[in-house]
Image (cartoon, rainbow, N blue to C red; front, side, top):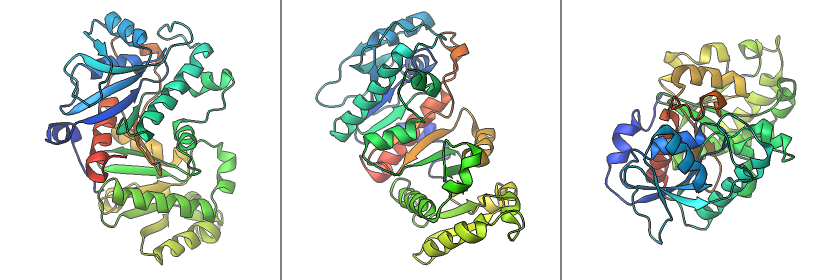
Length: 345
């Protein structure tokens, strides 16, 4: 599969150019997000100013517990690169003190406010992109805030009805036609309208954000063997193929619907730029097997650039010093790639 940067950590951070100001949200305060931010601050990429939208005391306490030097200060009017051991902060107050590994619904409003403040900053032109740490969906919902995930929440903040989740690792990009749905609801959600919206967004952002002139997208079928000519389901015949034909007539390069069990093979992926899976666990296990810890979650279809880690809150690792910041660093590098290719949001 064609990718814009096979090893961005070696190439993107060292290119000369403008200083980019990236908004960073650590996510769940009891998880590893604060750890990862403190680790990332030890070797920030050149030419980048990182602004953490969070409670500064949380970051300072977590860095101290990990034995990491961390200087926190406010951003100035103009972006300036962070030095080693340095982060800018835009303060958001915790509801209650956070303890590593101990979820507290009283801090759910804080997690959401960090996201709101960061998005406002970007939409107002005061930052260039958003990089998010992991949140804990269950505790946010337990606190009384309906929340199905970053992708849907950020779309609402940006005034967009439709957004697309795409995960990427060097050599593979996988986007999703549906996201956080029970399996029993997926078939009804695979409609002509949904496929048209998702594929138009995917094609447009692969062009505009990643610089791919004419993206080739492989499209999974929904059923085993892509329905086996209707013997194992008719969604491919009645919904997916007609939608693909409609978009091919507009010039999009779409291959499918293909059986998912044979789509993820080198002879198909080597000539493609992305895969569209019909549901979450059809495509993401393959991508995470290939690149877990070196993968990034990207939200397409927004007026802002947003990337995120490919993992959860890892409550058992919070404060232990054993959390790996590789995915957060890769998320930052992909955000830079998107900004350099498609311009500031």
